[in-house]
Length: 207
Image 1 (tube, rainbow, N blue to C red):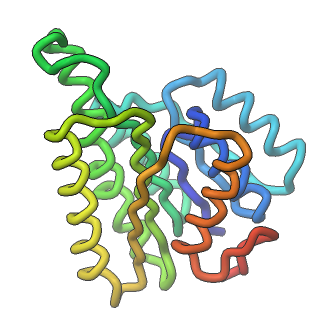
Image 2 (cartoon, helix red, strand yellow):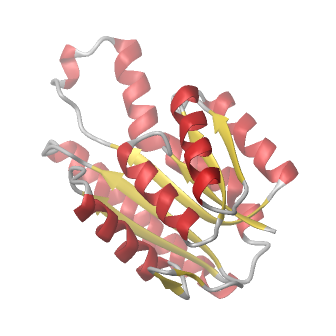
């Protein structure tokens, strides 16, 4: 039995991807920082759809927390999709942040996604047709230095996709605009359709 892992499931965009995948009869593992929001989302999904849903609370600025969550997933589940969501953007100049806050933001915004992929990659590679969807949410204009970092991360994903394509793993990267209700649902469906073979609005073909 295959599961889809959604990182950032407790965010507006994460909820949209979670609900879209649930409506497509995918079993889900939700990762987020807000336990109450995750619990509420699980209840909503199981009331509407006949799918299995689990959740894990993780701190994306804590390497140990990410590794622990991924170890639980790898020990208990088979994963053929990772929705790797990250929010980017800095509301202040770098020099205006205290060291601890800046460290957390850099880890959460840019470093943790690579760690999730690294930890779940062996699980994903067990499947002939697995997918990774990197989502970069930038609701506000980002500074030049951060845009360069986003470009680097996307180019890295392109090279990794090329390297692992023969193994059956497809990696796609998408930049997300500000959340916009119904338009965001349509955008999520479009991205899932581009990244997952057999995906349609009414469901994902079994594989």
